[in-house]
Amino acid sequence: MEGILKHKSKRYCFLVSRLDSRESALNVITPKTTPIACKIAAVAPKLSECVMRKW
Image (cartoon, rainbow, N blue to C red; front, side, top):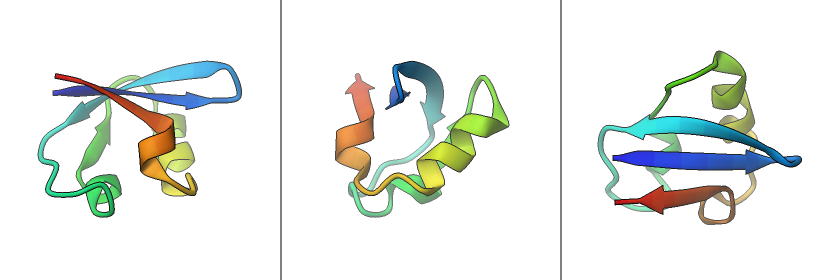
């Protein structure tokens, strides 16, 4: 499963190992490209607005 995080017109690709709910999804997202994306995901107000799930 992969997800794309949008932040200020930049896209970061993620590998999602497990997704129980949208609230706990931040805990199971591992960065695929850069650790900067992980920091952006940690401060994202709403994950559903930042991650486009593609599966």
